[in-house]
Amino acid sequence: MTYTRSAAWYDVLYGMKDYARESQGVHAMITQHKRSTGNTLLDVACGTGRHLEFLREWYAIKGLDLEAGLLESARERCPGVEFVVGDMTQFDLGEQFDVVTCLFSAIGYVRTVDRLGLAIQHMANHVKPGGVLIVEPWFECATWNVGRIHANFIDQPDLKIARMNISEIRGSAAEGWYSRNDMHFLVATPQGVEHFVERHDLGLFEVEQYLAAFTASGLEPIHDPQGITGRGMYIGKRGAG
Picture 1 (cartoon, rainbow, N blue to C red):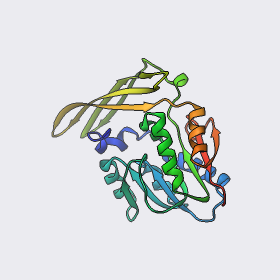
Picture 2: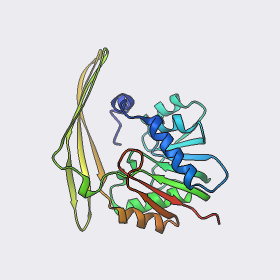
Picture 3: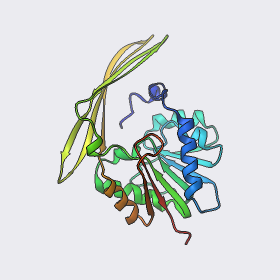
Picture 4: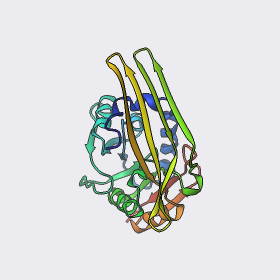
């Protein structure tokens, strides 16, 4: 699993992210497009529950993620909320929601176009008539900056982290392209210093591929090029039935 080693420091590493503002933006999109009358929301690939922490102001929430370590933090953050370990390409919770979200570009982890279709289909299966599916994409090939050096530094009294990587690309035009980030961690705590590497491979899907996946799942797709962070957003609307 991708975050097996770094799960404990996930929230520290992304402390600069404005989850409150982003959640308000998601709520505005839902208000604009949702036609069902309920307020249930499932966040797929919810991570540590940072968006759900704010979305629960408006919705009855549930979360799903493949990484059990991240869900430990989510349960502490949102007591009383149900969090389920599951794969976005093959989950079935046996219920539907007014809103299903997949944020912070987590959809990229499916990596291939076929698995993109599976993930969108399974998420769509959980959307009520009149409800919406909201997916925040990863980069496209044209916007992925190959060879860029990235670094993130944490300097706290009992925790020092240096995380560095260089943006790479893998795949082919025939098989599909994906980004590769080998994240090198150097972590110091009072217990000692450790170094490890986590590999993040994410599919560089094009607009047409997202739209096709939404349409094939039975949803009416809308592409917002800006979204809540500048990466865009895909909104799929389920007919009222």
